[in-house]
Image 1: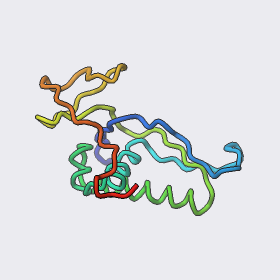
Image 2: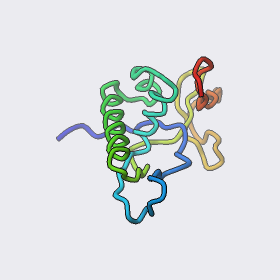
Image 3: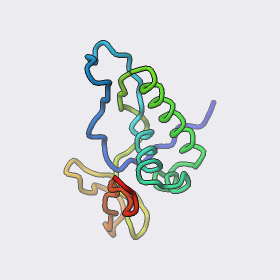
Image 4: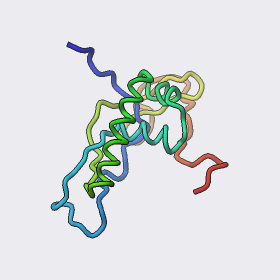
Length: 137
């Protein structure tokens, strides 16, 4: 029996959980599932252009785990695009929180988006959903 899965840290729940080809009703499409933690790995690595090592540190998992998550997510997106399937974002083994800029500790977010438990210094990173300055949009 293998080790239990380590919980992955995610900064936010996705705002959109379905993507589908235009003009085809969702009920008539096959669906591919991408987990929330796989989407977070793609956001950090592909959108924010972090290295896999940086993604691993941010999500508090090993680098090989990040490689496996990215591989599964990329394959799912490619399959959906090539075969015209819907993408459903759900599930996964994750916790929503923010990382403290000073000490690096993660804090679980409460319902109001404020840290419910975690480090005492409360110096959280700003959201990094913006492209890098030298990156074209």
